[in-house]
Length: 176
Picture 1 (cartoon, one colour):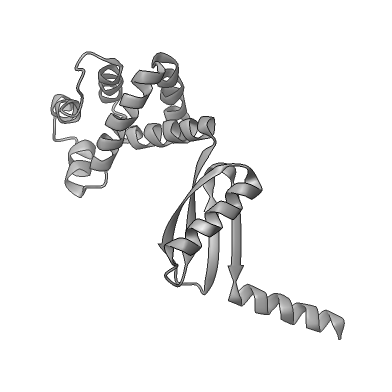
Picture 2: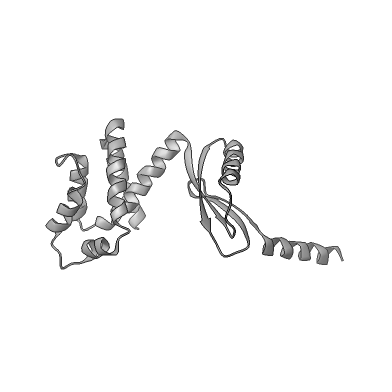
């Protein structure tokens, strides 16, 4: 439900901003969304004990243009008590911009640390296969194997040792 509401704001903001304004807005929104990872900030945003004017003032400190379209967006979000939508709006705008430039973010999960050269080589091969530009971020997982996820393409490629042995067992049992 929140994604649908955020999509409406995203669409309106995308239509209202020129390409130059869009680039500046993305930088500001990235800084604002970084605040959402701090528990104290989330407490301020979610608490009914703090007035909406204080919440709006805190967010507007990051704006260069106090009368611009981002100011209007923040005012609307404060008015409708939807400040939690800001990260969703930013993520949606970022993914739209990346799709327009054919650049995608991928996540490589592995149980071992991979060398940057290996990650770059994998990124190059996957980019060539899908005809895209791919940025990979490596993350650690507990399962033994490797998994590549590209959320915007809804693609997942996984190689797990456990799955391989299960499939091998099934193949041997079917052959006998």
